[in-house]
Length: 348
Image 1: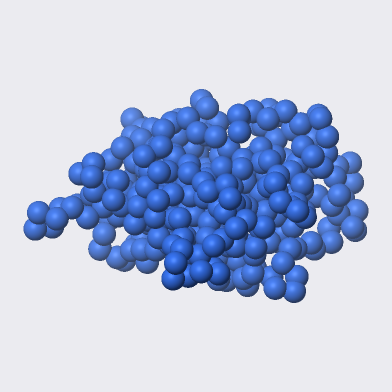
Image 2: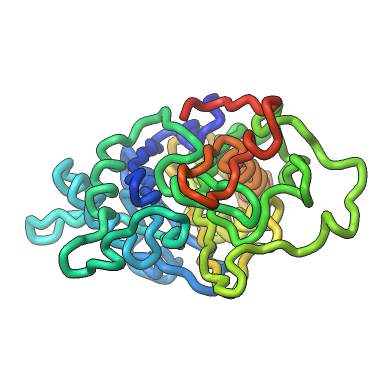
């Protein structure tokens, strides 16, 4: 187990970023088309083809999930991903035309200090996201970096640099569950002014430092902190959970809903009016075991609970593994803020 979402058989992940613009794209590519759904709880989402994932819609499977910075400009990324998938012959065929399905969610990282030339010269300069989507899809592999990479490259939280995180675990029924998160939260992943993560109860080993909870939660610890005042539009955490269990589209919908609880366990506050918080849920159906009759055993409940735990851990790892952006007034990363005791598990 790599403690990555790619522990779920059939999932590969690729990252690409533009350091000068301080933004990037992460793509989950599947070895075969997968069943998927989505749950969006943020008040201001930006997405591509997500309505297709509702259980009542006709299309049953997808070929990639795209997580991107750039706000609405970032929606170009799915075009680059689709070009790679098409060249590989992926997707459904209609009248000899191959149509891969790459669904996408975006986050707002336009105010992090990077040089977004397309904002000031919209006719002369185009956003980099189509190219970043292509490059991320081409880079997809079972091993990938965390922290200031891909869609997490430009991410921030209320008090620390955000980033890309991932985690996985095996359920008691034998299914593998994994999560992938691009953390650009309006709130904080840590408690008060200390190094303790809100997700600490779910940590496995020392994957984000092993600090545990503080001895006591004080009133200042519980005070609401959020970034972007008074603009309040510089947020959104986007994510994906996956399992090798064979799920229907409706079951994937329930999995996405349950997984959203992981964001609530790891970030405070979450699902705000200007957030676009979106969680995709994917079933690769590669496990040998079957769910069995509904409720006996309660495998979907267990998978959903594990997905929420994995997503909480992925959020904390995304912050823990990040490095600060090299710009004036950039937020510090976890290591810079809390010192040399931090040990990163993934090379930057």
